Length: 309
Length: 253
Ligand SMILES: Nc1ncnc2c1ncn2[C@@H]1O[C@H](COP(=O)(O)OP(=O)(O)OP(=O)(O)O)[C@@H](O)[C@H]1O
Ligand SMILES: [Mg+2]
Image 1 (tube, chains in turn green, cyan):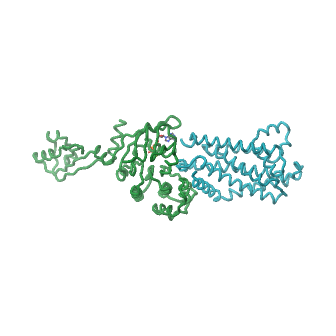
Image 2 (cartoon, rainbow over the protein chains, first blue to last red):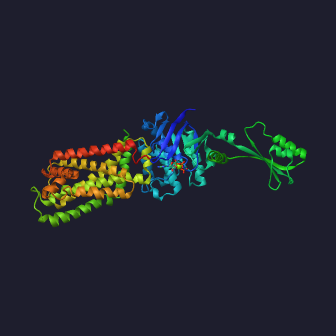
Image 3 (cartoon, rainbow over the protein chains, first blue to last red):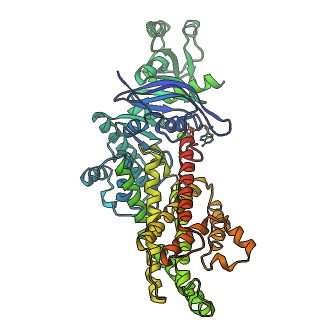
């Protein structure tokens, strides 16, 4: 696990006094897909901006592949591709024109066949000579991605890449991200769609109020914080729960038709055998037993509520 | 040096210019022709020659300078302000380019465009007045230096401006009067002594005067002084730009 980005005690204070990042330290592992989650104004964009050179760093250091992003900005930035949150493009420029500019800015010799490959991959080749103002929002988003990929970056920052993107395109983008990862690109993305993080990320970082609340392997996180619920659909409704069942933590729902029981996945003794035993001895028959797992979204909401409440 | 970046910025900016050739090249030429009609033909015949140069010919260097200075500022300030306005500047800020490379690309493109406009005006002038250039190489050098100098100033203006009003305010209220009163259409000698002294404080006057010397071999102030003044302003503007990038002023915040 080599770190490709290392953030050390990073603080960002905007012109006035707004403290957007508060002494952050973390590492991004080479080759991973890491999702930054957090509510509006949490500091996700500020963090990306500080790493990529869009804003000054008030305190602390950031290293990209060992290069200090301030002192050694040339080496550091050459490795980075950035897709900004806003659709910022020159309206009168053509798709090919703007992608060529990007490649040049990053110090790469013109390479039309390479750019063609990228535009084809993003279904933009037909639009290469169109002025950007004639493109739809989804196409503009893809132009931004093409620009970010034009110089073959080793780390790609995607700031809300799927905001305002339809389902097909979103799936297509997830595939692209996975493909890039297979080719050795490290990916940092922010999103408000938790299912997106759940779908593609290897690790999740939760940012809130300029601080990192946690940064953890997605599966471990879900296991650690995730709760499972046992649902038992009864054959006939019952009026009340016996003392035994109540003490086991079972609850009655749906006008007496359903029993629910919530338990931690980490615990060895789940208590399920005892519940099933009690049901048998009390003669309660049931039609169906199933379990449900809490999603990352629920975990996330709980985390933020813990911190703010 | 990131030469590909300089080339990319330069060609991108030139492409923008060439997308609107009428606005870029035709309008300065048309206004120049109007100046010739008014000052050269209508009024010029009643003017006495200045230092032995007919008034029609006398205003040619002034006209070129007037246009090159205002165009340089307009081109360069817009060139860098527009990406700031659109937000597309994010890409330049995240790219592995130094301030020098960025300035070379943007200022180079702005200066190129105004030099071309200046040469077109010179070409048009030959249609209106008999003209001989005493020191053509020096004339070219001063033309390019002036275009570079004022493009640097325009670049600073574009970095500084927070809105279109500020972008227009400085040229209209400061630059145009300085350039107009810098002797584009008259010799400083024609002024009353007090205004002559005031003109000596006008930097544009030194540039126009030096440029006129390259044409006719005579001018209000010495050519050496003109060259020193241009060099001084270029150094000052480069220093300001260096400071802007070093601190991230209005660029990275
Ligand atoms: N240029 C700026 N000047 C001053 N304050 C800023 C600036 N940019 C962001 N902020 C402030 O910094 C904080 C973090 O903003 P940031 O854009 O990083 O949040 P975010 O996590 O990306 O939010 P979102 O999900 O809405 O994109 C916010 O309080 C915001 O108002
Ligand atoms: Mg954001």
